[in-house]
Length: 390
Image 1: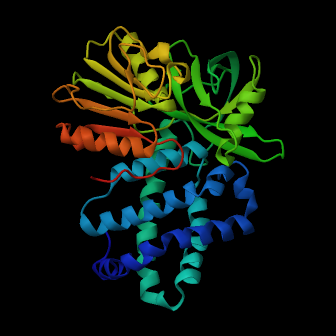
Image 2 (image 1 turned 45 degrees about the vertical axis):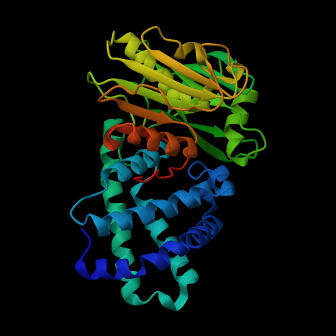
Image 3 (image 1 turned 90 degrees about the vertical axis):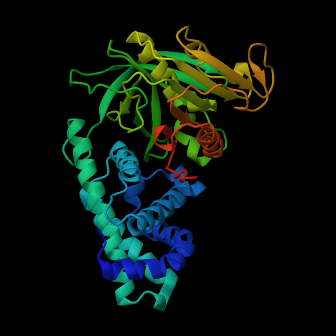
């Protein structure tokens, strides 16, 4: 809980701080990574730095956390924090790194805002930071413990590629088996792993991939879409170009709080593009467990040929509607996804994955159709961008 004195100052300064967060986080990353370049080797993704995604995600999380402290002083924004904590655990964030971040973040605030940052303002926002950091450290400790690791972030294991399958011209699946005898943490449908690779320049880079299949046979599958000409796609491009059966990859334990919940409620699995990967894992789990839940699968893509894991989504236990921008053949539909006239089951629980604008639009439509906001879950690939409450 934020102290009354700090709450008053944060409320008064939030508009100014919030308006400057993009500049503050840009200066923060520039200074920190300039002085601590080792953080780019196996922790911070330089593609996300180049695209600005990491900066925007950090700014959004700080603003969201501060706003929630003011609007709900007796509550902790667990949904926001859990999502961040799982992302941190997937890359191996450790407690001591919060001290490093604090140093450079508050240095950036002082540089950008200058004399507006009085001692009282700095102390109030310092309280916000450590409330957020302390909560994340506690959450991450529990997540690491569940993954069988201490708080040093070491959940990495070697996996051998036993098969490679081209799904589309730019998407490939790798079937993986543990390379050693160490116990493997079970994965829940919807979770992701980090893949750590050594780039040609010697720097280690990480990228998260949803497990598109994680059966009880000990095998796991990741499905990787290549992003050409994009700095954020350097890991995916390397995997596409170099990884073949027999090679080994370094994977983290599975993380992610957006997982398929048990129950009898009808399910809506809504995706676009490569966002189909968690839906494929959920469908596989439902079939494997003999579930009798009603399942409605809604997916949008450019064309049938570009729809990765299409066969996996043609499960007999699920109703489905696919939209394609071109090449649709009945019963598939032409154009962008449109929920008009779609019967949404009463009491449905929805899972969304795809581009953020797509998910914002679908979420709003589902709420208007009567789906409770608390029953709409979403996964964002890359640094998290909060969808908001609307």
